[in-house]
Length: 474
Image 1 (cartoon, rainbow, N blue to C red):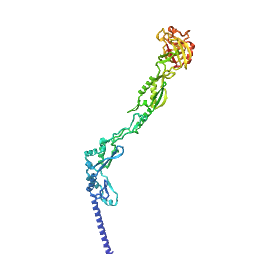
Image 2 (image 1 turned 180 degrees about the horizontal axis):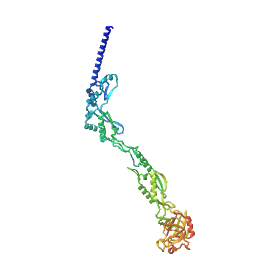
Image 3 (image 1 turned 45 degrees about the vertical axis):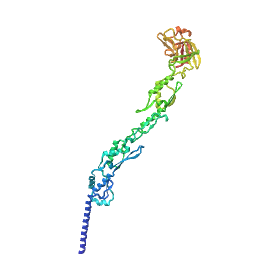
Image 4 (image 1 turned 45 degrees about the horizontal axis):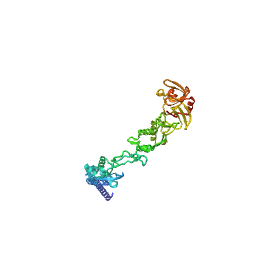
């Protein structure tokens, strides 16, 4: 073996060992260095703390607290987002608590033996450290009170959407949209801002944090829209009555006083509807009212009325009108009647009627203004009890029938034709009589009915019908 080569190899081995030992020593010493310093590419709260001792990093973080600012966003009076104000660290006496302890804990968590990897890999190692802070709450209160949007005089109260009263210009009702307002719940505001400061937030949105007082009813509220539709349906009703020949209109002019809106929704004053029907019935009904009548002899009389004339079914018509209003009907109609006359108006007897002249004991049957039959008769006994006296007035045939038996306190009489017109008073044949007319009725009259010759009773029976006018007078 060559002695020289052997010596060279030994020298190289020794030199390599020394270099390795030196490298290890350097690596160890650097690792020990990074036990007290942050590794390369170390960031805390977006601050580069590479190679820094804990105290140096704390100084930077403390500077961050000094520069802290919280931007407060909220709602403008127009409803847009805007910056309402801000809170600075100096405004509230903001200080960090336990920063050195927190940073040292981060430093202890890093593996200093991997320092070489930190040089080779350029990616950040980022830490987000929640800063434990303290501030003066009284100063915060003063700072907030200086922001215009937080002052009571500058806050706009929220207003619910609502339905207007009836509007003449639109012939209906409308929804007035809500006003969202800018009224803040300052207790909630303070809590939200305190939380933002504690969490080191740079901004806070009071609207997103539900700090504003909210409206309870918006214009798009389904119930509100349903109520509006109901109101406009009701107010759109147009009923044109032919009330015994008189035009009576029910439309918005009348309805606006009957329709109201309260907490329970749209309401129709049904009592007012009933009063309206009753008022028009009293005005235009003729049932039971005195009538002027011109006799065949040309005398004008004023006569009482029995069961004859136009009589409104007030209860039925009230119910019908209420239904029509709720349905928003548009139509022309007559009211419901319990009784009708042959002709509309105050002179509703018409040109077809029975005229019984009780003084002269003579009867005329008119059809379309012409006398088609006339006859003598015998009416109620004037010398007997008062209930035998045939009443005078304007009546209507109640019904007609044949082969009836008329019964009273002391009689039971069969007749062929029976035509009652006022209770038990009526017209019928009287085959037991041989004479009619004259003054027979004064002492030998009927029990109150109009006694007729058989053939005349038959002729009248063929011409009259239920409701056919019968006019009796002395």
